[in-house]
Amino acid sequence: MGADNLGAKHFGARITRLEDPALLTGRGQFTDDLTLPGMLHAAFVRSPYAHARFSKVDGAAAMAMPGVHAVFAADDMPPRIATGQIPMLVPNPAIRTPRTQIALARDEVCYVGQTVAVVIADSRPLAEDAAAVVAIDWEPLAAVSDARDAVKPGAARVHADLEANIAAFVPMTYGDVEGAFRNAPHVFEEKMDMHRGAAMTLEGRAVLASFEPASDMLTVWSSTQTPHLCRGTLADLLERNVESVRVIAPLVGGGFGTKAPFYPEEAVIPAAAMKLGRPVKWQEDRREHFLSSTQERDQYWTASIAVDGEGKILGLRATMLHDTGAYLPWGIIVPFIASTTFPGPYVVPAYKIESTVALTNRVPTTVVRGAGRPQAVFAMERLMDRVARELGIDRAELRARNIIKPEQMPATASRWSMSAAIFRRASAAPSRCPIMTASAPGRKRPAPRAAMSESASATMWRAPGSARSRASPSG
View (cartoon, one colour):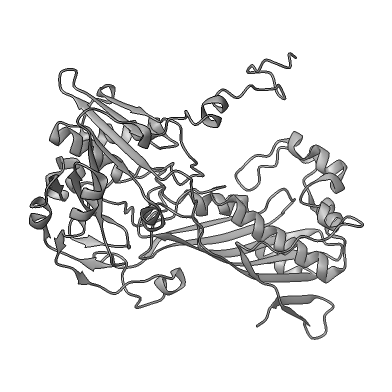
């Protein structure tokens, strides 16, 4: 295999990075570096409330300011953008309330930072000043910020027209779970709360749009991870032939999943450019990023593991509550992936998980850095550590006893398939597996991850007249 070439069948070849010279010399071109003749700038009016109703957007004061060209609310947009929800990515029949965002809110906002109107002006500072004087007749409503409160009976409704805040319920199971736990010598339970996180990209989201009437071509530059998805969704919302829409992703200053969804701004800016007949650009600032770019998780797990006297897994079960925020832009893919990833690389004869997806009055959550897998791995590995600690088994040895062996491939019991090549080396030499090295002789155990917390204190008790033990978190 040639070291300097990379082909479809070549792995491990050295790859020459093409983008480095431009980036290292300051010649990299991002969306906000682009300037077109006659270009205008946009600033969005966003909700200051987690939940509120409104009936009027008054842009008269903003329009009276010098350099302001337009103030657009929902009814000023093309019909599909004005009234239709942004198409959901990865729909799922388990979703009870397929609620996605309208590009500009019409009469209700459901999280702080939701887009309500857009101001177009000669410069970004002028647009921001004008956006600050747009008058809206807010009527604050009760809001829910915690998924655990959202699913309680009588909880305030995240959306006024919905009867409940449960967006989806996703059960998965195989094997004799009840029998495994009933007959297991040892059962251990952990409760784990995994809080929200946000991807702080160096470059915020950005959109620049230009429409050429002579060729009927709309060109959009977007700091997106998914230009083809953006193009298709935009053509759908504008009711245009996809061939008349071109989307360009210049250099992107970090994405991490946050720039993967299609956002309201990616519909509104092109619509404004077409309406005004001039290029329009919007660059997200850091405050907007905190308020309105999608985040990850908030998940609450209660997970139990059943093992025999040697630490071999007999069964695994869990309930998981996932906070999706106010909308479902990417469906329920994150809790779904977490549910299927939970058993990890181990032989699990019986498995059951019930995932509840809750709506809250917070910015939506989507696929960020692993799309649910890190949360599932965290939950499973904390259970494995708990078993090792309680039974006095070396952590690496416990994992070696339970890891899927090459001869057991493909492992498909829980609806996914694993390749033998992935685990052959790990099962042959577990001390070399990154997940197992923490307890190798002479090595220091890593500190718990700051981004995720667990309830680790536990008490043990034995059933009367039985050698079987049961353990659960305490405190």
